[in-house]
Image 1: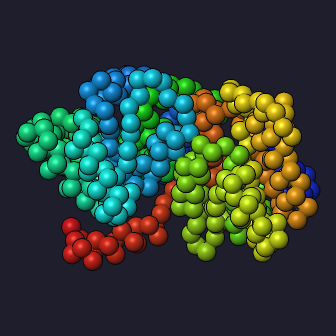
Image 2: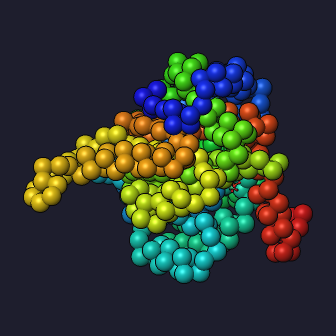
Length: 412
Ligand code: PA5
């Protein structure tokens, strides 16, 4: 694994960390042994079926040839991963635009997407593991008739709808069977927020022009890294100690790269939905540096002492902008970025904030794949150490049930 974690800024005794290594190793064993439900994502990058991947890439090629726009209908784990990757990573020339619907009930947002669908040659990609999520049902019920009108018939519209859902159950699966949509399964043993390396993430990512094979290669490299026997678990152990023993309530991850804003949203879902149960968990927050140093930086420096800070630092940038004249003449913007990070670490450490540094060599599909897998595994380990099930979301299900009742769909 090329991602590097430094937890010296937590000021822990080495013995405190070492004491937790056996428990972290046991948690990792649980994940790999398959004894825990919903751990299919653990081996997914190394057990990727070449034929299935080839089919997915072929479908993505056809979409790119035939359409200008893919609208993904998905929410939570059924869109976050794709959006995070698409916003973060460089695209190859043949990628097309990917937009997302079903992520809210905002009429103005709906209107924009509807206008796009009317104007542009569009493919819909409906992603719902359960196949029953109301946001997605509603979005499809709005866009399906628009597609039918635009392309002339139900059959022509159906040729332009792709579904990613459970192999057997759910309303969406029933519709797939009825309408014959091109479709991909979300494996039964992989939950939404851990599904970026399944068709739920990979199809839109491939359509956008990102090199999916590189992404998977990175995730596989992280999965098989020998570091998990030693320092690979530092982040999980450090977060656990901050939560359990040092009274920290919020883990604020700070990025020095502007394209990671949506990756931050993905992290919030991953950690929030996995850990936040049974009265436990660190509230995951994110900040963009240096932008937020001029606002929330004040709070981190002098406000309530509830924070663990995680600096997620992209170390390198292939492009270079040299400042041609003036005070900073000869310096590159990247050098200023490095100096900013160093200054922040000094200032926030002097304020007593415990701080973890995570270094990623560069923002490429390969390292992004590593980062995703690293975060998923670390999050699952911390959840297990905290004594919660990192793979369920009873609180989310509760809201879904209440909303179904209010829509008069109780039990349907
Ligand atoms: O992580 C999860 O399981 C959730 O966030 C789901 O992804 C989200 O609720 C959407 O569910 P579904 O894919 O069943 O429509």
